[in-house]
Length: 83
Image (cartoon, rainbow, N blue to C red; front, side, top):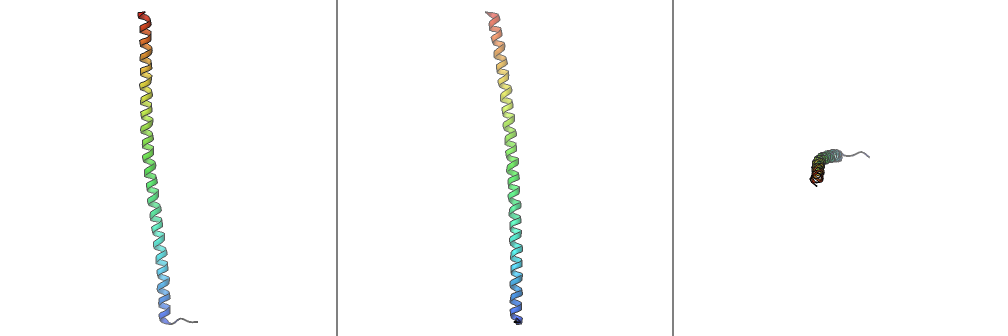
């Protein structure tokens, strides 16, 4: 049940190839996972910036509406005084 020298060399080369293949596939999976996480983080930051911009827009719009309402109230008061 012993292997000849050439069979041992072939078995050793195959074993090394399997280990190298495993290491390479693991490395590629880790690399892809890190890239995906970086993409998710970048997308999250981009979405947060969009949300901040939208909140600022809505706050500005609310202030503008408040100013218009206040101005309309003042105009109504002046109209009542003039009548």
